[in-house]
Length: 345
Image (cartoon, rainbow, N blue to C red; front, top):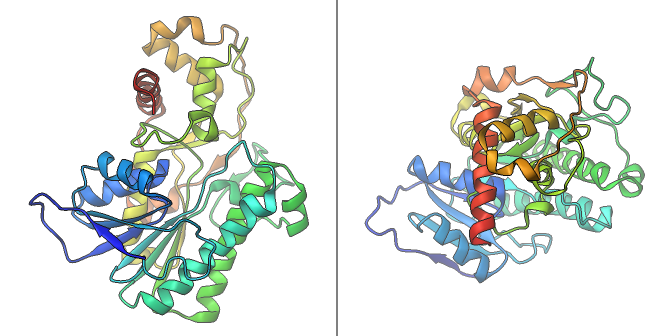
């Protein structure tokens, strides 16, 4: 397995190189951009040469390299990827609506992939000082509490979903459990193996915003699908909000990078939520800014009561998290959708 380095076209070549796994992902692409903008050299893992080409094109290739990891659960899959780097951003695969087998599609890959990369770092990445693991607010949600508007979720929330419940439950239950089990496996690794690096976990909720790499169908990603379906499903009304907490891709990417940089973040968990939203709010914003969408948007209204919240006070205090507003994010998201509709993938 070899690492392919692209010419930096005269750009500076900082001595610090960090790894971003799954570099073509919606969130990962924003993390890569933020790191490059701050002067880091970045190595990404991708599953194929075709995807690698799109990643390099999306970021102009400056200070960017890639390594092929076709299957992250193969033992030693990340051994070569972690050599010669100083930090790791591990972003596992997002939940999709096409999941049919929770155990093999979600649980095993998430747990094995997380355990595998940590083991590879311990054995082959002596210069790594910190790992930033992307989890999800979904991993905080206790099925017995759900979206009770009287409950404010914080980093202290740990649901108690069992393996059997995760395997037999809905795709969302399986996804949430995969994040929960993978993170617990990571903290157990840190406790038992006592590696030389530390760990930070980041919890974004529904993530929307402009898309850097439209390499996946918009409907396969539930965060984006919540918005896109409002433009295309010919709904009579927006309907109830499936998951009411949100964050912008760009803001959670900045939080990832700050979590890598700041000493205070060592061995901490951070929820990065910008607030709550409703499907009706999304429609109202789209109707205000995109009159050409009038014939595509729901005409009826769905009024909802107050929903659950996610406490982001810790990430604001420790990492200076300063998220943008919902209106700006929705406008930028829809502009991305419209551009993709024109140009395709």
